[in-house]
Length: 141
Image (cartoon, rainbow, N blue to C red):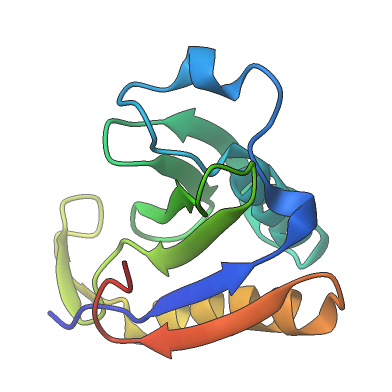
């Protein structure tokens, strides 16, 4: 299975949220604002983005309604001592063939995962308040 690219973004409107520190599993793993932003924007783009959850490595956005489990990982770290963040997002479901017990066979996730990534990129590109810093195959931080 192939890994997915990381989209590295910055936006003053996607900084540390009030009270976010109290929700973090691990100190310094921000990204709630970007997670909620993507959840809402993906819903407007026809996806069933159902929940935002803080994990020990960052934030998770569940994408329901596909033939396979799918989620987006959001990672954010503070820029200096400000509430501004360096953020990145990636579709955590690998591209390629994945076994499905429900269908008792393999599913190829590639087209759907690529479409989701393109939608995330499109959401960020369309918003003048969000800057795409880079798109990389490896974790950017």
